[in-house]
Length: 443
Image (cartoon, rainbow, N blue to C red; front, side):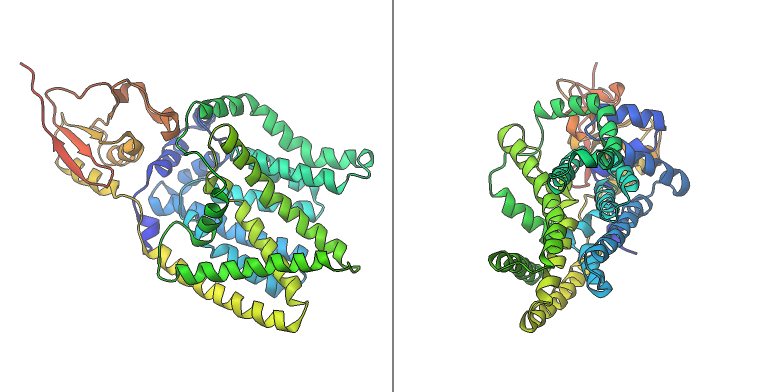
């Protein structure tokens, strides 16, 4: 048994499961009031219908897309590099990347978002534009940040076709009309969601240090484990060598193969840099929205670019090939170690334990209130799953719930402005504990 699959849901995962358990119509209209489009919840809805909503089942759905992401990355690398062994190593680096690996075990849309984006680019490079268009549309319908990646591909397309734009209008239409129509169809909801975000969000202000912080999160993950320092240092060396290759090549005279190398590298650079820069400038000059998990497709594109660059360096001189080989072996060794540590640890508060204890002893007139509304959704999920006769309330003195904690799933009758009188009140604490609140009796 893998502890990471069976640990308690946290707030966002509980939101996913509760929302996906509703009808397709309800999912659509509720997501229109939330901050992300509904495609992931539609898919999760059918997954739950087929297999249930247990923690290991819904998280396995994300794990499935992590494997599909690695598979798409393999074929994307094969499109760029004809050596299947190097492509396999690059796809393994994506599969075992600590950040992607962690989110591969969460019931959230992030890994699906990455898979759709990478697959869209795979079909683009294979010149299967209708399939690429389909996946681009699904990408936009999965996460609002998908628009940033659509803009990046648009920028590359215009750059690539800058000399014959009029002749390429049919190509443009076959590739971009569908995702643009999806975006326009969701535009009103998209605008409402971003306006809501502009009124106040949970992410703090950013500075230029976010470039370093994001890189660190992407290649260390969010958890600590014994080999993290060695793993990160090897990553830095590999990235340095990848960058050094292009600096040397640009400084030297081009050969006949350089044109392909540059074009293949350039689309990847557009895809991992432009979305990040858009999110950074919005965060720096309007409202902070930049969070690593929202930009998760950047990571596979960056790893693919590094793999492609190291392959070119590997073929450049024998001394470099030996260095690269040693570092790649070390990288994969420590990546496997990090994966072992990640699956063995639990990182979510055990709200399921508190709910189990409370429902076993609560009376018919007892109520449950989480100490923090941040834990309302997971408390609601676990209490209702065990006992439907025990009411769950969210306490808010002004009756308001921040939209970014999933307020669309807070029913009006579940929000109270004062604690109930003459009832036993069980309080669930953020760390998964619980206690009985002192009852205030009325005469």
